Image 1 (cartoon, rainbow, N blue to C red):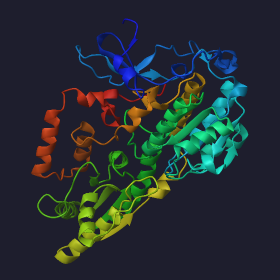
Image 2: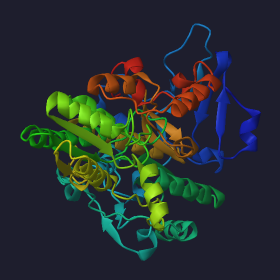
Image 3: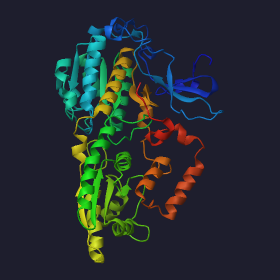
Image 4: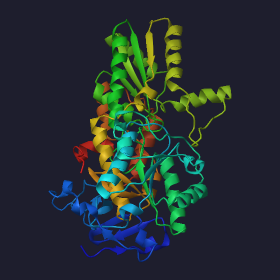
Length: 501
């Protein structure tokens, strides 16, 4: 490969830093202090003298190391999009005594938040000798309400054993000028922002304002969403824990349903716009008869509808379990709201407040079979949403959180900024903000993982001829390899099993 060169298009768009090379190689690079602050001094990385790392061969990441977004290729496929590999560099742009780091958590709760906080604090302290780390209390608004918590290794030592976030969280409250003013006033020069796509949009705006002012402040995101709806990355932290904990609710529903004639256990799980938790919990359980997610439309009445399938399954087995993502069937609810002229409400982050589809569909199923008088059903509705998101992360997520946090710290110390730390094809990477916030990750119901679910539950697709035609048209319009470009957790079979590193 020839030496990479900056694409002419990169200079035209300050939000993108593109490097190109031979054979279709494209690096979607992340910003660096050197891009807008000239002649900054660099320092010896203290990890070189850390006895814990003395046995590691080639511990420092080469500046040319990158990770491909697409790993399933054809012999004549261009090399495609890459991201910068995460990890420590030989030179750093901060001295230990110079660093004043701040950590903030925003949005809803998720297993692993405290683990990420702990590992940022311990990583800064034990790897780089940083002593000044504060937690911004209560989300973005905490920046200008002056509430902070001093974070030390002793203070955070056991917090990974607890759910929630020790520094508090909130939705909304984002005022870019006030936040950056406060960052300047406090002398903060590293900001670690833990949150979902809305939070990372805010982090991107903060970074742009920091760069506009020419500040030596690293703005780093750690993507957090229990729904796993953030694109590019293999999965979000807390997802494995959520799927595992959802098994308890599904098992309870199965016991309830199987203990009474024509028993139905209905479990509502998280998933506003993406049905990953419902899909993976269903596949893991093997006790689920029907899984309903936002990406796959369904209808209630008539041939091929949900009511018909419920009646058929109850006649065959005498009981059934339904798993429902919270965002599924919202179009059916919207029709009800429209007829009842119910106003649409939003939360402080601007997200549409969803009606309880689980409760609504429970009543609809009961009413349907009650009116038919052909079959008496016994339906139990279980909503474990807040129980799941409030628990501590499991062992797998704890390891993942550690790698995310340490990678974020290494990047900030090396002078990178305006990025999120994320796993791509089993490798820790630095991803530009704009790639994380440009769209949502969703279940692709024309992929093999959804087909596996349908074959596991033996449920109908619930697709009308109109839905099938729309999917076929959409698929026909896509390039043959597009599904591989946007590889997600859906295609874990193509990636084999992701290993952390």
